[in-house]
Length: 180
Image (cartoon, rainbow, N blue to C red):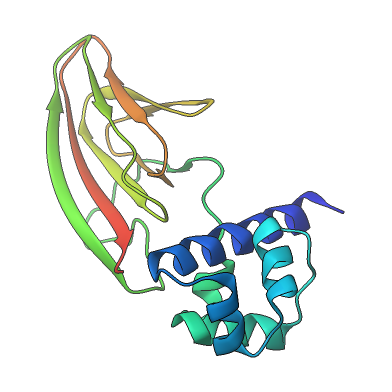
């Protein structure tokens, strides 16, 4: 099995388990709603089944999820958008195709200090734009240096921190979370 297949199976398993638990459904309850066997649901939640599209659609419908929400995989590494100087106009930094709740933050990190952040919850994404200064984002095994004008998108599901260099740093951050 290749890495992409394994990541997709893991995503389906985690998303299914999370949605079922959030709705306080047993495997039997969900199986009855979706019209599939309890054994198949158990295999899906363990990431060992190869479900058909019809099974995924039925299970998703029973949970009130569309297919994109059911197969959503988390970001595995930060995505950095390089600085760009435009004479006029605007540019889209990042976009999201699904319905989400967002929070906007402005932060200043003092020189040679850090700002630590706890995980924001399952399915959360964090987008940060460096207004001024240089900062290093540390998340999981990643360490990403960023400078003025650069933006980064990463999974907000893990602890992370911003470490300022020799000057204060100004950041604008958007936290995007599933609207459950």
